[in-house]
Length: 159
Image (tube, rainbow, N blue to C red; front, side, top):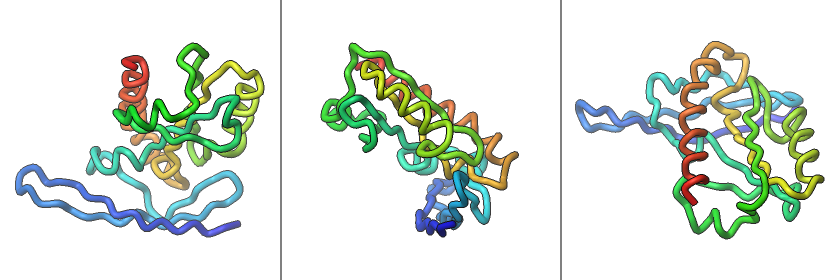
């Protein structure tokens, strides 16, 4: 068991007063394949906090089967510097509650497709939004994960 410290600061703009509200990310403990946090991240209270950090898109291909290229929505420079091949199939994998994209079924999916050699595998890492033991809050955060995932797919298709 390893303790994983998180030191992220969340800011949420109050549209009525134009003031920012600051939230510190809850500390977490990595236990086997699960991330357990002391408190949930509530995207319902502040849905537009840290869009590029709450969800990370990790690209794996035959050229980089074990080390991910991080992709960011609207970052063409990073996209075209990565090993993505737009002629190959693309598989996008969203992990489940208390999972990580680097272990268990995520690892199995990634290895299976990268060994085929003709597939871009994009692992959607939303661990902090789906951390345990906060199942109901994680379930509520799925709308946000889906929204950002859809924006990412739209971005890829537009390129």
